[in-house]
Image (cartoon, rainbow, N blue to C red; front, side, top):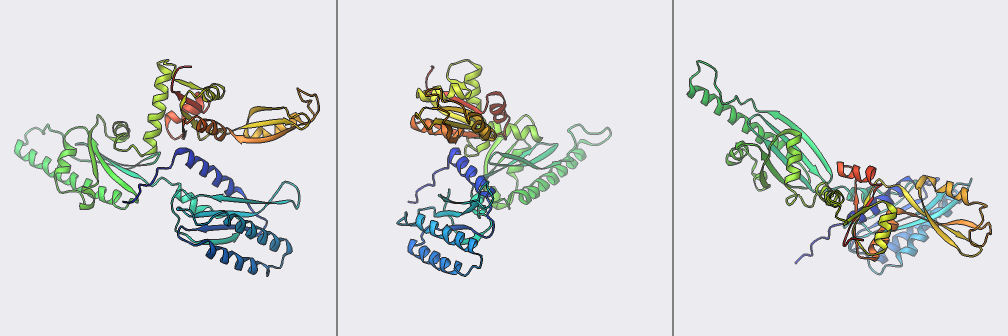
Length: 420
């Protein structure tokens, strides 16, 4: 039996996305940056042979600097490749090249080995001015999609929920008259006209359902909802394309149609769409907000309080915002080894270095303070959480609750195993 694919955690996705963002910003002085994609099943010896050939080809490059940088990058890739006996199950991606530094003419080789989040099919060696990250970026795109169809006697709404993105694709009116007929019109004639309008509406809904949902890649299913019996009458008829009939996941009653009704479906169907990150993040944050609002003592927030709870082993789930842009800076004394840590915005790390330059060490009074280490706070807190077997969830700002996490709670929060 085929082993089910393990769902990537929000932390793994966050880490890979951050790494790709940094790699995407890097640029060589010429076509000196090497990108290597090795698909699963490929033999390491075969890849090494290709790289040796590319090394020989690079000897023909006229520019001494470019030739040396390309050959150095290929050498670094081959060295990393030797660390693997076989290609990992998802394949292997290596980036290497000379990246210009601050000083004029100053360059430094940077090499990155990445594990793809899912099996790669591409076999690629490329030497360019930028690293080729687009194939990995495509893998981070949320692929599971749910269709939502809302209908009542007055209108129908078609929406798509993909990951954290909710998109209303189309809204149409029904043209069905109300149940009160105009004066002088026979009841039977009015009823026939109304039935004809309902039939016409159902045909249009069926056509738009096919047009909107049939071509959607990764469609997991469709949820049909709305107030009243119209939705059920529609499903009883032969209006849906045969490929979509088996994709109906559930039929839900709502109080509204339109955008409000779509949000109602998202609220009512978490068990159906449990894998959709949009729903997961809302549920996660609503649990935290409940604990805070009811003062249960089972939630805390703010960097200092969360750090304290983590080190006590009290955190069940660490919740951090993906919009958090702060770093943990370790300042050390080169003379006596004294060190301290402080938190600063990522863009202010240079200011911290300037501030401590020439400052006396609080322990030995020697002016030997330097910034020894700079670490992303999300990574640092996640590292502590993993030591104590706490879950880590990285939440986007795409939902109202995610915005609240960032703006009202400083982007760092936690639900606790016990009161502290």
